[in-house]
Length: 360
Image 1: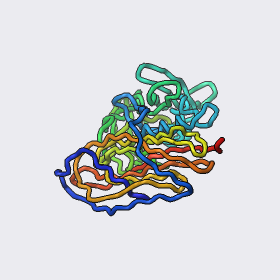
Image 2: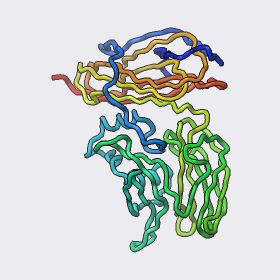
Image 3: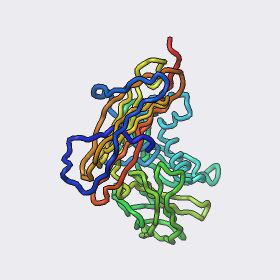
Image 4: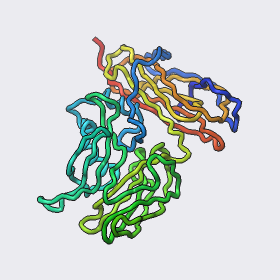
């Protein structure tokens, strides 16, 4: 991280030492007319969440991402598709999984468990083929609660191993059942922070009625806490005709997340902007560096942080005033020490955008 600052030590015992890291102390504040940024009172907003036990596969990964979008989005913007379950499901298949031939929404059913969107393709104007039923749920509630893909409904093609929510590592054994003839099943692993799959496998033959299939896939570069495993088959009419997905937790990941909400997200010069920071996950927070986007920073550093097991769940606020109009990106970069025996260093960040107009 560019700024490793502000020691965050919480009420945990440091007697469970497994390994340690030392950091020197430093503070700095730069930028035009930068004001001191001080912690404020307890937060006034509650970050949105997903219903238990669902995992956030796509497009959002943290409550902070959702809040940031809610603060800046409007109905006439191109990102208003987050409020449409059908569009989100289709974009999941096309934009995230890379299945460009999946180009139609066949149907949508909304139940108590969320939205179930059938996506697929139309070989002719009079026929349609369902490739998968994508399962989505809302982040929180209310008219501005966006949809999140959390999995798919198994029909004639299932991915049952690994189980949903399991901890996964490479190489990963995958499998399920399929009904069909002369099928060729490929597998890929995706994470939201990567523009393409972090692992792929081709192919294993399969066929029959409810017949089992299995494969082993290797992947690398898993940095996100949640991964999407997708199996696909095709080759009769087009390359991708059916697919199924499941969500897993990446082995070795603490699931540490940083969410930031700016209030207000549209301010004027000299107006106080309050940034609510929510840090959640496992591991001991060690350092934090905040930049406000106008050259101003805040933070301090110190001491020895011992490797131990603890659960981080911290919400706090900082304030700032901008001295000139513009669009600024607030960034909170957090470092943590993961649990023993590896005591791995973990770096994550949260961001929020603030648009500042001229004062009156």
